[in-house]
Length: 127
Image (cartoon, rainbow, N blue to C red; front, top):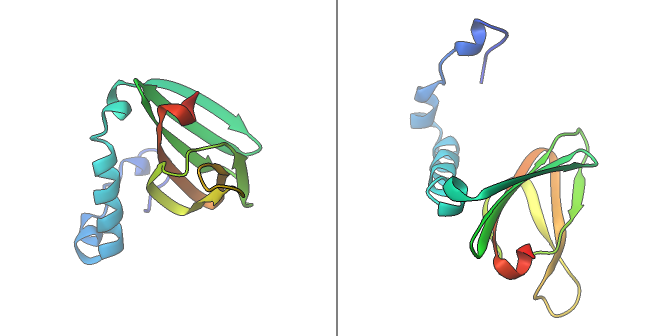
């Protein structure tokens, strides 16, 4: 998306691209759907940054949503155990790393440069 310093930072999004680029349309639909999750609007926010990886987590009741963003030019891994049935809501250049063993847990996430991963977690994985 083009733009620069003020006042160029107020340039409008190229909506024509949404109509012609199905990948952009799919990603916008995916991200808009995530916005409807209750935990996104009502949850408590936790921020953490380590080794160039930013993690924003919202939790409420028995669920949570975590956003991992790689802020560097190199691949980053975040050791974070999730239940294997945690659901990836959206990803770009990122993946969940499976743990060895019974397949009930994961051992973390891997995010490439300019990548992100959004994961929905259940209570057991949040404690």
